[in-house]
Length: 252
Image 1 (cartoon, rainbow, N blue to C red):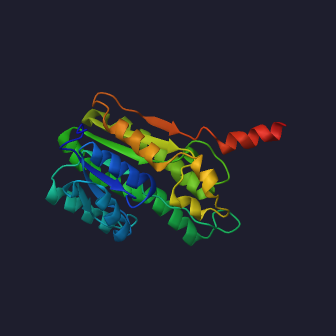
Image 2: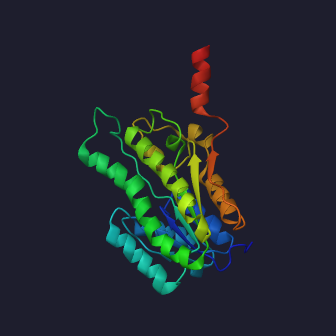
C-alpha cells in the first residue's frame, strides 16, 4: 500500500510499543517517518524494521527539553520543509505513583513527560500545518484520560486528561486551517510501560491485552481518513477487560 506516499510523519516515543507500531504502519503505507525518543539504539532498531531505509530518519531527543524539541523541528524544516502527521505518543510512568510517595520531583517527571512534552511537539507541528492548510495530529492519551481510576496513579490520570482537553481545543481553533486532531485512548496495552507498575503482570495476561500492532493499525486508519473529516476521539480496549471483570466478581 502507498496511500500515504509523499507524506511526512513525525512519531514520538518511536523506540517501542505504540510509537514503534505506528511508525511501522505509517511507513508500510508509504509515509516517510521521523523517529524520536530518548534512546538512539531503540530508534535505530525501529528504523531497521522499516524495509525502505530511506523512509526512516532517526532524531533522538528528550522532548521535555524545549530546545531539543526545537532542534527536531529545525531538522524537519531543513530536510523536508513540511509535516503532514504528528503522532504525539511519548509518555512515562513511575513505580511510586500514588500520593503517599509522590514528591515535587516525581510530579515534574510525570507532568513534563506526559503533557508538557506533547504540548511542545504541537508548537513545532502547527506552523507547518497552518502553512499547508492541512495536517493531522494523533495524540496517545489513555482510558485514564477519560475515566478516573487508581491503577495508573493520580498524576498520570491528570496529565492524560490534559491531553484529551488539548486535542479537543486544537480542533476548536485549528479546524479553520484544515488541521485535524485525534485523541486516542487505549485501554491496557502490552507495552514496556507495564513494567513500571508496582506489580507487573505476566505474559499470559499481556497476551489478552490490546497489542501495539492493534494500535498501529488504528493510527494508520486515522491517517488515511479524508481531509474533510476528523475522528475527534477513539477508544480501544481489550475484550478481556480486567476492570469489567473485577466489577463482575464484586457482584458475585
